[in-house]
Structure formats: structure tokens, C-alpha cells
Length: 286
Image (cartoon, rainbow, N blue to C red; front, side, top):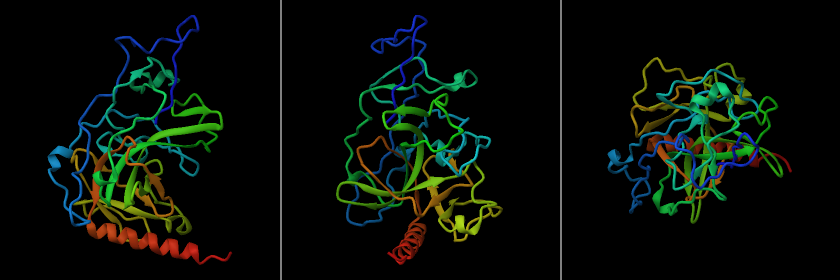
């Protein structure tokens, strides 16, 4: 779901969305990513990876960290997948308002707010996904960062308070009957866990690209998990982490792209780490 932001003409009236101006920016379309439906084994190899390659739509390069405890930092280069700058799926049949609340210095790459009354809804089911996949989807959370105001185009006022929206990466953990459970990825402004205290690090595990350089440094407390991306031109940021305590449910009909998958060994390692954290939390007194 992306929140609506009407632009106004010079006389203060709303610009019609029926026929947006020819100069209106639209996300570049590209083939969607999805895996064929699983067969017998719960851990099948990915088939026809060439069909999974995707022309990633342009995403903002000026984003600060997405919430409290995530400080502002310089953006990562476009050749990497940033957990907080996850590529959004290709645009569907929607109209776009020409303007946004984006600051003028960002107008050369400003995203357009979608003129729609509801979120993009696909026809996918849980059968189209597999555990261990790294997915990207639009995410909306309460804005707890006082440095972010409504001048930031990712912040929108709702009737229950300001909401912050961005594309985020998630690791699919379990495929349920009608929905899925996933853990979010973070990079903390491209600084990762370096310099963080152990009490903070214990809730995260570092992510490493398959075939990463021996110079890659693990700043976490646990062995890293390995991810193989489908688009070899878009590797995971070296500072990417998975939050063990940040699980959420995901509807398969959300506007989801699949960008990679954990190795089976790494998935089992991640599941064991999650189980340990969950058991420790359950042992806390009433």
C-alpha cells in the first residue's frame, strides 16, 4: 500500500488523475518475480532462475534509516539491495499524481504517490512462495522518529497519526495455511552492527552474500546466514542483518517481489536462532 498524495495546481485545486500530464513520472515496469508452486519437497531448488530476474524499479537514494534507533547516514550505491530501500514491485494499472511533498533537491528522482483507494492486490496464494525466500514489499509503520516530518514524502498523516512508508526486505520463515510469517532485514543506515553493544546485537544475525569476499567482516554474535540473490547485479549490502525478534504476518496477495533466497543450511541456522530467542522470551516471569 502506498498512501495517496494529491498535487495541487497553482490555483489550489486538485489535479485530475484521470489523465495525468505526459510529464508525470511513472515507475519503470518490469517482470514480476515469483517461484513456481512447490511440489512434494518443502525445500525445492528454485526453478528457471532466469525468469526470476527483474528490472528493479528506481528507488530513492536519499533515505535515512527507517525508524527510531536508526540514524541518518549516506545512501548505499544502487548496485546493492538495501533492506530499507527494497525495490518496489512494478506498477500496476493505476493513475499517478504529478507532484509529491518531496523536497526540491530530490525532485529529479521523486517517486509518485499512487492515486488508488486500496493497496495493490495480487492473485497469489501461499503456494507461490517458499520458506527461506527474501522478499520485498511496501511497509507502513508508525513514525517514531522526530527528525522525520511530513516534508518527507515517506511520511503521511493518517487519522490515527503519522505513518512512515518504505520498501523493506523480509526473510520468509514459515508458510502457513493462508498467510506467511517473516523476519525483517535492516542495515542501520549502511552501518550494520558495527559498534553496537552486545545486548543489541543478540537480537540480530548478519547476512552474507553467497560467494562473498574473504574480507567480509561479521560484526554479529552468531555465524552469518548466506543469501543468494537472483539478480547478480544487485547484491545484498554487506551490512544487512535479520532481526530475530521482529516477526510479522504477510498476506500472499500483497504487492511482493522475490529478490533471493537463503541457503537451506542458513535457513536452518536462522530458525534455530529464532527458536532460542523465542524460548528465552517465554521463560521470562509472568
